[in-house]
Image: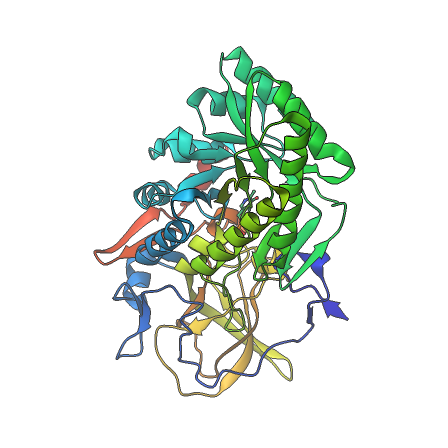
Length: 463
Ligand SMILES: *Cc1c(COP(=O)(O)O)cnc(C)c1O
């Protein structure tokens, strides 16, 4: 019986078999630089540091559980993406991976644009001073209020996701006396995840307008006719945690084919194409992600080649990495609570957080690594499952992990690569308080999203 163990979710099952785990690492004290944020080290006393600060000090000052985000690493990754794509392309950070006002300021300073997909994300972006023209608005069910506001503040583009939305955005823009820049999100029949992709004609999911059966062509026809819209291009987002560029290859080919059809039918060459995000990161030592410059080179080559063969000028490319920028930059620090050895099975290690601060293991059977970070140990490796404190047996943080056999209550352990889709998906299940996000740079550590308090909980509960 196989379990799903796929970042894309249970319907992408048959990837890992139950009980799959690699052999214990040769050195439990080693920190694989692939999965840890750039300034993470283990110092001479055996304590892990980030930005030169010991995790034990961080735990004292900020408590546990907490997310520690390496600002130096975040900024370096932003720059790497911006430099890799250069002046002929635009990089939009996908805010849903993790968004806060500090993050918005870093993005601005490093020259990135921003994707939002709700009024709340838009508010965060604008409040932190992101110029509206550098914001793209996404989502399959934007409310009328969200659209009205996006048009009013002048977002750089709205990505249209349905026929209703084409009409709705056009109407709203016109009633404000504006012409809104838009892209049409198409589904190209490519589902790409990690090392596989599936190319089909149809996709059974909620996003976008199908290329199949001429639907996307009809969407373009309508958008071009409406005065309230300035159609600037076609958008395609094919999956998540992707390592293999072949899915992008098929997607780009299909999008370029649509651009050629649009030129033939309307005599218009749409100037932009957006290939979405979804680029993979290393959650464990077994993952081998590509560098931004390799991705940029591959994507640019694919689009250029396809356009040449279709006789089109190469459009301006945009990409939307979320996970690939923020994912590797943070780790979650937990304190070990109870330890329960189950004879012949494994040892359950309970931490002071769980599925409320990292739902990805429960939701997608995602894989993570974990390390003892408050000290080193020469003890034998023991097979553990790191679990949370919630009233739910699926409350698993790391399904299969080796930790030293002398692990004890009070030890600090850390789960790396939790920068994306952990705090942003955090919940209050069991009225557990959501952890803070602490940014660390060469000047020290500071809270950028504070820990939730019991007062916060009661404030929403009006009695
Ligand atoms: C989620 C999403 C992204 C970002 O995906 P990552 O896996 O975080 O890179 C980009 N674009 C769109 C449209 C998305 O929905």
